[in-house]
Length: 142
Image (cartoon, rainbow, N blue to C red; front, side, top):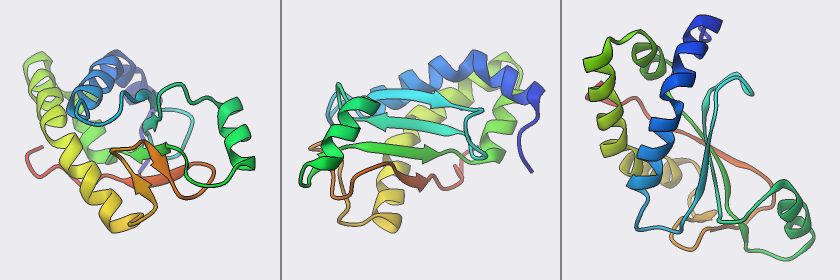
């Protein structure tokens, strides 16, 4: 079941915190541009791009040879987002902290399962042009 408009509106207020937690958890990797995409897709998530990558640079890179700058869509579990949307202040803070603590390991597992040998997160590159997508597993602590 998709998120309701009300749930999406509630998540808009926590989106900056989720982005910040994701960026912090990837601090040992490249300095990624991370944006939250809630209503653009059926599956809400985060977009992780190589520093300075834009649609224009991605189009130019598509004409070049691999490796391409990282353009990764990370789908977030709907149940996790739904519980975050309905949480009180204290539970919301705890859930955001847990997200930050688990984001990087879950992202690395998703990449290993879904796009092995296609993404080099350390270097900020991918072997195919365009957007690659992975889905985070459910957070067991949520």
